[in-house]
Image (tube, rainbow, N blue to C red; front, side):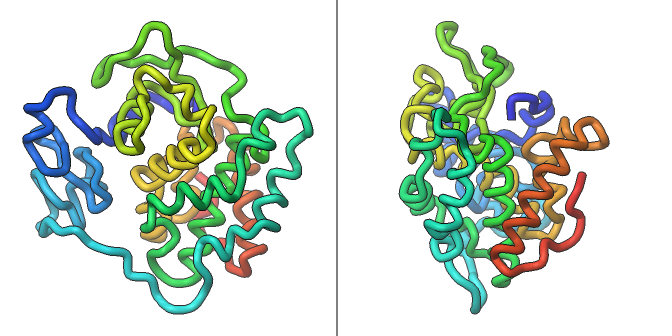
Amino acid sequence: MSSLPPIIATIVVVVACLSSALVAAQNCGCAPGFCCSKFGYCGTTDAYCGKDCRQGPCTSGSTPSTPTPTPSGGGGSVSSLVTDSFFNGIVNQAGSGCAGKNFYTRSAFLSALNSYPQFGTVGSSDDRKREVAAMFAHYTHETGHFCYKEEIAKSTYCNTTQFPCNPSKQYYGRGPVQITWNYNYIPAGRSIGFDGLNSPETVANDAVVAFKTGFWFWMNNVHSRITSGQGFGSTIQAINGMECGGRNTAAVNARVSYYTQYCQQFGVSPGSNLSC
């Protein structure tokens, strides 16, 4: 995620405000003019203000609500898909000297999953399997089979348009989706419960927090794309759009390859629109 373009900032969730006055503006904790999405996050795009918007200037004739996932019958739960064999089949491909090899564990993933019950529960059995396959395809690519806790090419990644930066900290990629930039760390920290401004390194030191940042980013920026049938290619656009349009075909092909491989393991067709 280190090469995410600035445009991603337009879809980054503003989970909490910078003053108590703004926090008091809505029960969701959004600033005035921001919508509270069905997952309890703040933003201004249709993903927040459209269908199932809870509070704020909701659009598209939506009625503010607090929906719950409506899983359909058949298929297994996320934990039954992400078995020890499946998870270890990925992490065991990392070299013995990889910092992430003994950091990322299935138990840490499942612990983080408890905070995000909407993940992998929407739509048909095939839909749910595809979402799990898509997430792990990106995890595999971003971390090199869970080899890396932090990106190699470290930089400050500070943009003070919406959020401050601690001048002694760097907001480079960490965790399974390599969460990057202060404008991701700060709202993620407020939502999850760590100090993203002053302690971004927590993501590389606590495996459960690391996976929670992965879920946080996914539920805010990716979940609706794949559950609405936009295809795996749309998830690549959400995570690293700089690879799309022929700019990094090898990276796109690698993500698609992992996705189709995991879909095959789950016994589901990968669907259409695989590339971006």
